[in-house]
Length: 548
Image (cartoon, rainbow, N blue to C red; front, side, top):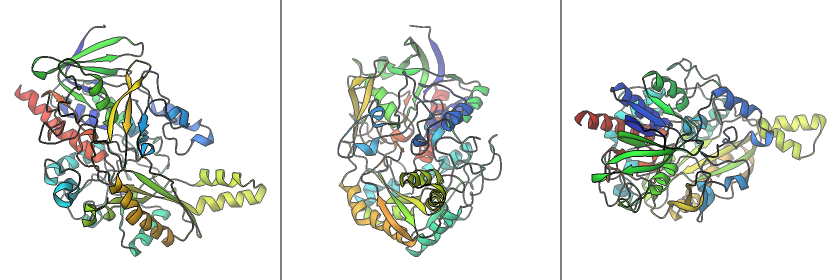
């Protein structure tokens, strides 16, 4: 074993959660060491990887520019065979948990859409209001200041009109740091159509600079390839935060795969152990440990770290580690339209319909978020036209028609935290000898009822309003890449993994913040809520270390 390293705060994971905690700890005068399983890479390399992809991989294969390293495997969406290599999936809706995260410094924020929705007060009281799911252990008013801090920390643009904000007309500590990005023609048309059927298409708050530079990042220029990488860093990604962390004195170790959490007397975490890219083992000691590896890698690590003191795994006296895995099960409809719609102007996602996520119907079936994907349709139009074996002017005309007159509508359903939706350790092992994650997933009748009775009929309403001549519904539920659950939050140590500050019930100096702790999934993107929980945990960490 190589020589020990140490810091006040040791953080596994360099995504948005780990970076926000690192910056807060450094600002408080604490030493910070961050460990990243995958490589650290320059933006130009990802852009070049993307540009050099074959046409078949340019769309819907967002992980393709991020080839995994042997020591840090992640899902590759290039072929079904490669997709089977790392995530082991089973259950009635296994396809709906085929998550597209990357194990690179910066995490999945490299290729996220940047949407930063808040959850609502009702979203936090599912059990009390509707008799389903779980309640959060605190109210929306507790979370609101952390939402505001997160919006300013990562740079969120959004509307100033309270009627266009979400939750609507809710109290805010501060306005967004930047105004909203304008809609393109496709989103303007969707807004008009939605209004006619009682659906409100809101401008999405997004971690993307609108018209000005912010935190050293330039304004968005509408490249429209936020998936799989923003080429100019107008969109926040955690990779842009890493130089700031180093400038403040933080240390970052890439290609460092944490594989074991070591505890001592009184359940105190004493160290983490990691493998480097040569399979050499190293030990890191510290005062407080933060596992921020996402909601798959975090419970996997906790379970793999079982020992005589913790026979069910670290932080798992409740048997809840790995349970309650969530993501918003997604359906989409591909449309052909009578008239041009022209998506592709601006970011790939700039608006969402969320009033469909709220209501008393939630005691019977789930609420949902609707949106139109705003990516440019020309590559898809070209591929579809070529399949028709057209040539010359006929081919050119059909490419133009399909590029302008096609669209994709998406609906993402609110999940429930269900204990049987569970991550366990597979018998199959990766290159380092670490068990791969095995996930059982069933979206539940709660979601299936919603699709049948509520969301698919509403998708058809939107399609009809847009003038669709063809409506092709996806044959099954798909993943939204909003990974939640696995280390669920609560006040009781027998029914939850972490307390309201994301501190493990079993280990007072171990924090498991972010999506893994969320007690409910809601219908909207999870990243801003993860960020708010990270800042709440950071305050608790600083306070704990100051008190000794």
